[in-house]
Image 1 (cartoon, rainbow over the protein chains, first blue to last red):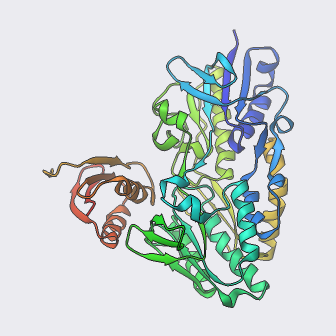
Image 2: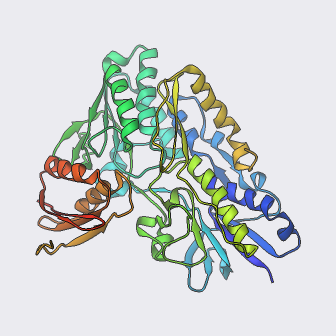
Length: 381
Length: 79
């Protein structure tokens, strides 16, 4: 009798978990007691942090893609298929590959985030983003021809992927335009939905003075309600209007529909115990990464650490032992503060972040990590 | 003490950390019609300041704050 573990999604969480299980359950997989299948909608693993650098001409979207099969241990069955339904009662998945369901004994949902720009009228037509390959390429074209006017970075969706990225973008934009001698003709405004510039108060307190020093305007309590594609006017629920010549938005985010349809959680985020990562509304289902509604940032480091927790718990369960591994909220994040300086934060459920002084060496550390990320995906670091 | 206000929708943000509860409320108000009342359940202490501040900023009305043993319920009307 073979125990089937199915991982849904080949992003950071799914890939790291697959490699973790290949190592942890090597003997069980080799003797046929356990089978691990990794289902992904497409052949590639995508490393999204590359997209932040695309608008500035520093990277290409292709730098963030590699075939999943090359990253994942050969003990794992990698399948390019789109899951269309999760049935947690029957413990099976339907896919677009055919009528035969995929049966599971243990399911791990790592379906990530999707963008939902259509939730804000006018945003798709009038806004740009760096949260997708096509968005970051289109934004590069806009930035290259933008020599004067009002650039607005509006954080509309929260939670969203990489909570530091909007701050990084305005810091980098400010620096980039200064280096090109254009900054005096370009006004930069940053908007955020709550009363400070970041969801985490410690990061907000650190970032706000930097924004003031750099002449980056700030609008807080700004929840964009609509954008007029003709005039570029962005209107908020709070009644504020901003006239943008170039609107860069962090669109509303959702998980995937099949999660909501399966009753696992709202807006496609799986309701989980934030320590064990077990789904609240189904047995033998875990979630990790962006898909898991834990309240911690939707970031690669989170998915990475959560994968270790899920891997250890699954191995314990398979061996009839009490699972004891718990996710403690650990998150690490580099924060670019310009084109060649960065800060770094590390925090968890108990300990708040304390951003360190920006330096060039941290910036280089971030770039070095972005290169060595492929070792993370392969389960090596 | 319980209120007589009948909410149109309820958002249960218990367990969510800041700014989750406020963002959940903003999302619910975004989807609400004028006159609808959203009940937000939160056990985050920050909600006690975040929620009234935002409600005032957005020009909505905080109809009532209800204290429970393990959470606070905010009744917010979309004006």
